[in-house]
Image (cartoon, rainbow, N blue to C red; front, top):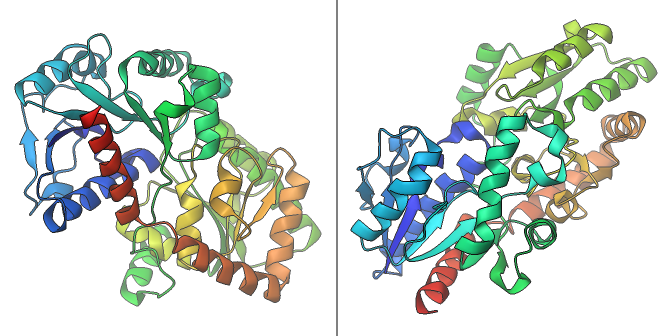
Length: 379
């Protein structure tokens, strides 16, 4: 069975989607080598494809379109042609823009991580919103099966895209084994030097864009400091620039937080576990997530978590985090204060988080995904 995979999202620099693609491919390759010898993966490379992910594997690469940057050109003409030339049985688009748009060649599966442009249209620039909305609209006609990472995302796909529920499979993401509570002193020291981190810090990880709700987090942090002064406590905001960062910087100045905030920019994947482990707590007040992988990663590192009570985040967190209304900075501040001041609560959340994170594995994700490939291929 030949499975085609769109390789343009095989890069950690695009956040959760890139992490999903990389870990899924690694787990699929391991599964094919160990238990599924009939499974052959063909990756359609792109300029963004991280070749380090593929080193040492027996995966077949289709390099015909490796220099093509245009998503529209790849999706409308080149991918259908590649699927035909490579004799692909099932093509898997690893994100919503990775499926052929205007023509269909063979059978296809697509992973929709979320439908945020339709749920929160104000949270995207107009061009970005139009591109993603167009890609999402085509999925209803093109894909035999849609994979989503949460029940909340499945409900949104039914509501906004009118995809039948029987064509949707919920496969939660996994958590990489690197995220664990055991510290690595050398990496911790390297991270400390690189980012000039304070001794005590609250952590946020995510792309800096409006839906991540960083402005409310800044307001909540200012309230925390006003109510219970913490001379050595800082807020570390780790993530690459999206759009709207200027507003965050203006908020920092207006709240008088310049000396208490660290913007690290994008943090390399191999340093993330130490960043989580060093934090006093992790806060993720996003307004909408299809899954929310950072919540799981923080838990796996033994860091207490506060997150939103919206969309998929309660599914991911379960009872192992404090859930708050992300639109209320005072609620967020109160939750942060309670964890900082209550050692018993911290230890309880740590224990629950570690247990919950162990239930999410990439091997399990790969097994469920292969089952979908086989079902679609037979259909």
